[in-house]
Image (cartoon, rainbow, N blue to C red):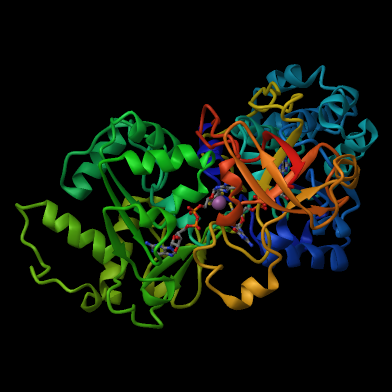
Length: 554
Ligand SMILES: Nc1nc2c(c(=O)[nH]1)N[C@H]1C(S)=C(S)[C@@H](COP(=O)(O)OP(=O)(O)OC[C@H]3O[C@@H](n4cnc5c(=O)[nH]c(N)nc54)[C@H](O)[C@@H]3O)O[C@H]1N2
Ligand SMILES: Nc1nc2c(c(=O)[nH]1)N[C@H]1C(S)=C(S)[C@@H](COP(=O)(O)OP(=O)(O)OC[C@H]3O[C@@H](n4cnc5c(=O)[nH]c(N)nc54)[C@H](O)[C@@H]3O)O[C@H]1N2
Ligand SMILES: [Mo]
């Protein structure tokens, strides 16, 4: 199912945000929507109120959206594959499969059927901790709805089985005919404001812009012609592989742009070692981050409100960004920095930047941003119909192949890119590091409403800091009383990789045996504890499961 995975595996919502209003049933799995995507969370609440949408929340924690849900499945972290396979099992067993859709639009259904044949709800209850009856009910609510949608985020993907989890969800959507119609689909809510745009522009080591593979000769030759240079057909390294390569010395120089990996990478001692060891480190950021502090060169960049361009949001909508402010004196637009450095690297070419180049004076003009956009539109047919003039009227959702095309709110309505969508048989497997006698708790990590990632942007705001609770570990009251920990007590949390100390938040929104720490706080950095084991296919690290011990600090 190349087409489907290329689009969905790379993480794009199949459907649009407006369609949320008409969803009959939704499975929200591994997405703390009201805290991490509050605008979409609000649409979900409105859908419950106005349309009677049934929400099934599948999350180890009783997240706020559970208040609007008709069913909460609280699976153990890392057991989603078993849960989803059991839902598929029930749908097949009870003849709830959309036979017409499966027959006309898909292939390889039998392989999926075989793979889930033994995945009974009772089998899944033992693995997930979710009562078999609840799994049955969830499967029935989802499969019987006319329009059923799946929303997922990092609770599904940040696992050594992340790719398999996403493919299992695709099986679920396909067997019920929920891909290719409005108010349905498979919807990964994208993280940063422009992560969709960054993926579209090939911030991945295997592709050129528009998910066109570097190891496809025809594709590569087209890009060589467009850009007038020779290009490598060898996929590069992923971020996690780069960390290892910096440690073994095979990478000697590193340029980090808009990331703070010394705090955001799981197993941060390892990450810090990598970034300290690399011979030459450049960091380009709007603030002096923990990663910038250990850099050889820091390039100050301009922020979003200080530049022209486009951002592509979570529903594939390309939107104009306009400069509202001048950057601070030393900072300049990322693109101007990249151009300035590349021109100095390329001695054959005439340099358009004067040798006494002053950052603050180098503003990028709208015309330049537009020229770059037009180049992208020429490289990737899915946005060939989008241009700055049209964007004046409002954002446009790709694919938009020509100037008369209105854009595409819902993918796959008229078929899949490769013809038939293929089911993938998935066998569930455990997380890499499981609790044992020494480290008896599962730790899962994530976000809170008030903070953003490593806090470089949010923790500088006094208003946010005063509203936020600060670092905490969520722990169930039963576990807390056994360990004689009271709400607010300081505890030490240790994994095989590190130890941190922080206050306990004793709450029954989390089940016994499981703990949760937000990763925003450098004074109690969750990533000192997390495991950097990766998914074999997409190399995402397992930030959502590791084993820890918890003790009251004396
Ligand atoms: N306020 C705020 N909003 C943000 C961000 C931020 O830092 N702060 N970051 C943005 C970015 S880049 C991203 S990627 C998104 C992430 O958005 P989310 O994925 O929604 O955020 P997380 O808190 O990482 O995790 C979501 C949920 O996964 C659950 N979970 C943990 N383990 C498992 C598991 O094994 N299975 C399942 N099914 N669920 C599990 C957690 O309990 C949590 O409720 O948020 C974006 N929005
Ligand atoms: N334990 C644990 N670890 C995680 C996760 C988790 O759930 N648990 N989630 C992971 C996920 S999904 C994500 S996305 C990462 C996030 O990890 P990072 O991306 O490393 O975290 P941020 O703090 O968002 O760092 C972004 C940086 O970009 C800078 N910046 C902002 N705007 C601009 C700009 O216009 N130009 C430039 N040059 N810089 C800019 C900011 O100042 C900031 O320092 O964390 C990952 N790590
Ligand atoms: Mo993210």
